[in-house]
Image 1 (cartoon, rainbow, N blue to C red):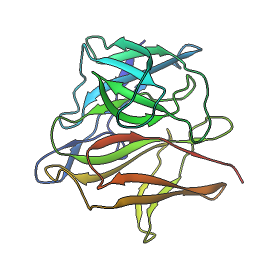
Image 2 (cartoon, rainbow, N blue to C red):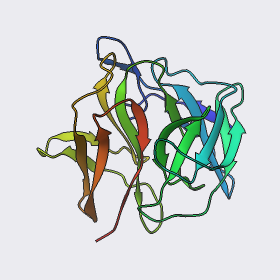
Image 3 (tube, one colour):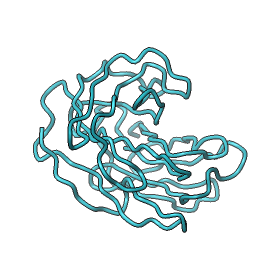
Image 4 (tube, rainbow, N blue to C red):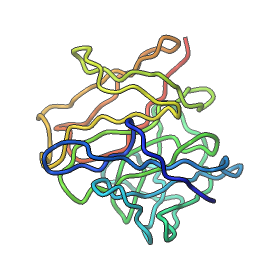
Length: 212
């Protein structure tokens, strides 16, 4: 399994304490993942450097306070990992991403066209990122738009279906109540997704949409 680092705007970022996004290093396979395998990289969110020797796995419980990690492995010297594809689950049944016994988000890991990158933030960055997927095929959706409840555009998915909403670093949390966003696309029914109560921390949040 080999990965090539690329820099794009709507992806994992490294943030400085002055709240500005200063870089990004998502990864993409040079070839598709083997059938039945999910590939990804575990990255330090603020430095964008890969984390070797991290224990990464999928949990059946996609919430903080997860339980029962069903698959896990250790990242290699380049922060890369490969895990068996877990059984497909419905829109409201994602898996949790767990790194070194820490819950870091939720998603729908599949082998085809899925980027399993996970960010570890050891500081006070606040961000949401992930993939937007077709609920029937699990294919990435390009050009989906994340709106806040005031219809302000917060992010648009790239050619890999990847998005990122960044509130900055050094802030710790933003707001106090649950913050909702709306993911929309002309060919799909829109879906609300939660940024979280108080929008604390950096988490992966995949979103699945139903085709019209």
